[in-house]
Structures are given as structure tokens and as C-alpha cells.
Length: 137
Image (cartoon, rainbow, N blue to C red; front, top):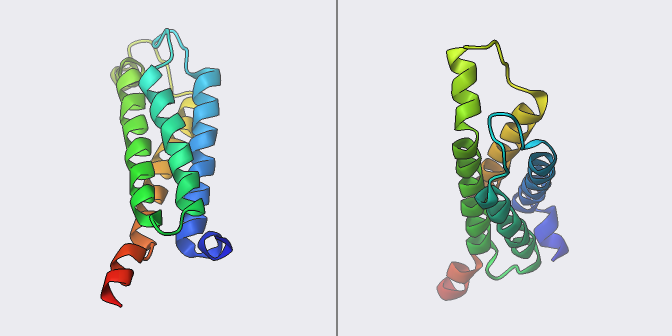
């Protein structure tokens, strides 16, 4: 297990988990705005499912690669649902009707969500597939 944490793949997954936890906390604390009057349940659900998958990918070395891809999919869906939930806010800023700009919390949440799924994908790609190795030996 320690070897799995010290590998590049493990380090990337840990950073991905930290980014997703940060995004989840920020979204829950600052996600309600005049443009989005309620939090998006799918964002919270996908992040809440992806985080345990990320942790499990570190703790279960045999299926680590497959679980990392599951975490990646959950984080990607969370990002997509975040964009869907915030589309009115994003469109309002691009149209520039009332001079509203992106808030710092929106930008940080957006960046953390992107980091979570990109790092999970890279982590899965860098992981050695232990199931294939067993078959080859």
C-alpha cells in the first residue's frame, strides 16, 4: 500500500482527491448565488462518490487502475454538472449585461474541478495494470 502511495500515480490521485474535496467544500459554501438559487445535487453526489473511489484506488492495489478510472468519470461528471448548474452565471458574464464578473470562489471551484478529473485521468494512465501483468506471467 505504501508503494502505491509513493508512486507518481498515487501522488497524482492524492492531489486529485484533495482538489475534489476542496471543490466540494467551496461549492457547498459558495454555490448559491443570485444566478443559481440552489446547489446542484448531481455535483455533490458525483464528487461524494468520486472521493471514496479515489481513496479506494490507493488502498486496493489489485484493481487500482480500474478504480482510478471510475474516480475520473465521477469527477468529470461533477465538473460537467457544475457547468450546467452555473451556465446562467457564465452566460451573463460573457454577455456582460450588468458588469458582473467571475467571483474568486467560482474560479477556484472551477479550477479544482478541472484539476480533480484531469489528475485522476493521468493517474489512471500512469498506473500499471496489475490484472494484465498477472495474466502475462
